[in-house]
Image (cartoon, rainbow over all chains, first blue to last red; front, side, top):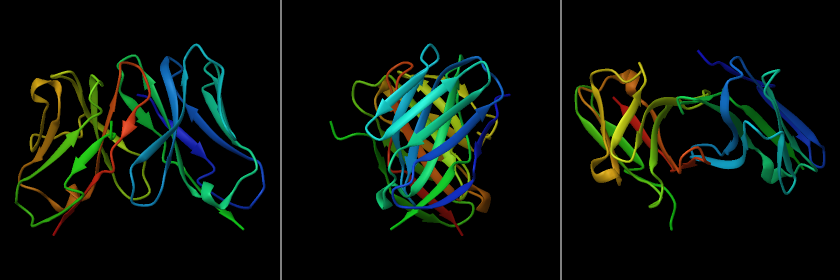
Length: 111
Length: 112
């Protein structure tokens, strides 16, 4: 059974810092990995999708990397802003197309 | 294209009542997923459809839960004889095969 762990569980940083959020998974036979953000009481917003054949994806200030062999992904946020405050979730999708989510990293960026 | 929509957004019901939620996916997406999320947890997979076929169901989906996707368009999730433990946010997502999942805003269920 796939298990996904996200570290740290919570993070509070001043504005402008560069951040690294970690996601690890136990079964490396994945189809893709997706990073989401979730604002309180809301649905999930997709940030980046990395296919199993890819090593990284970038969108604006966000960069996500994938190392299948070690079962790890990182989400790098450059020059953090208060508007980045949210919970960040990673989800891995295996061959059965059933996604497994981590519990998320709760991020607060204070001015 | 207005994205994935879910109705109702909030539902309060008494224990033992039946409830039904609706999800309208992005029109060209052939996959539709249902998840349940409780406070402080990531979404837990419940079931998914490819077109009108229900391909996978989680063990979380007890006999009281049923989902349908007639004609491969919108989907409904019904919970019969609700229990307080069913209180959660129910999320729907859609995607094209193997691609990015797009989530709706969710339906928050409170069982009194």
